[in-house]
Image 1 (cartoon, rainbow, N blue to C red):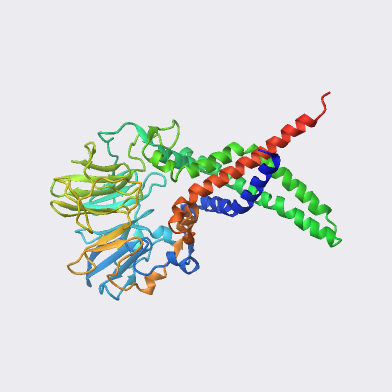
Image 2: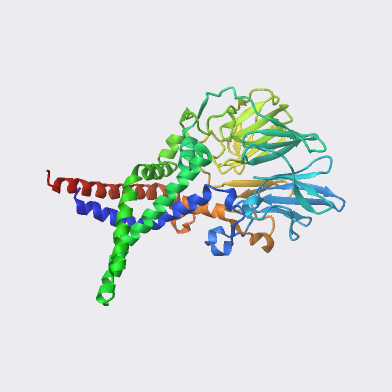
Length: 505
């Protein structure tokens, strides 16, 4: 390819896609430090229409819990923006978040439960809480977990309170001030390998090598931001200098800035090309077409990384429920569904369970001895565990096992039997539910900066793309890879030309 062609490619790809590269880098910096930015929110009024609340959609309502106190029975509604208390389920909704940390990201509720002792508990993704009836506020409980391990579920059996994190189970008895930590034994099908998709995911964020790895990827993001800014200056400064000369103004200072800008753009770009290409490639690989291959592949954990652990369930646990018919426990994980007779037993895979989206399980309920409801962004299913039969909840037609990488048109984000007497309420992520008009108190809840940056990073924020946003990263990733490569080729070609033109002594 001719030098001029390389130059044109680098120029126009760089100019056109620099905005998107900057958005990748800035959003990635926020995503890499979730808790650091967890108190910062953004008003939904500033976002596209698709991000507004209207009908209990977008995960604002995921479940309900009955709450009995001296005033009678109430209902706690919970989801991605906190908790709401109601007695009149059609009009009366009160804020029930007093005591919770500020920020929508700190109010992502994973479960609410009242024990036989009348104690009311809740878990956010970061905190374990008990409701203080005297102060009428939630009080954070001193449950010590490993590192920044997130809570995923809250359940019970008898007077035992069970709290699930992404890696461990904690069991407490009245008065629920002390908890026993349980690490599940390796499953019977454990092969010692890890998901290739997860390996690439953690490589892209740097988390594969812990906090130091994250800081290293942050540095690469800053390098890419610098390349974007110096690249834009490379093309626009000459125009500014030219206008200044025509106006008879001095341009010496501007020319010096331009030369330094060009020098550092080329120097930094060439020195970091392998690393920046690697960062761009690993991000691109997390979407189709490589996503499908990565999702089905398992590889040995890279020695010395965060994937190497004595706990084979590290970061895999999602929900836990007791099967009162089979008298065993069902464990939903990122690796599939497992059964175990007790917490000392090895979990056994349950191949007949319905497919669950990679986004995780959202409905996990035993309605009667022979019927479980299993829901996720792959749909809602009625599962007869005894026979292995699975039926679609909406059509009642039998279904076959489906890929976890695909999304159903009816992405189910929640379920309740308490909102409408005698009826089951299914809450869909996009359509929500029409069980009651949504009050302004809840409709005007903000979006966390972390969630917004996730939408930016994945391209879903560009709602005008419609379903095309699913391929946003695929297209943008290739464009950015080409921009970086053409820039490197220009620098390399110039060096070769310089060497050839230099007279030999």
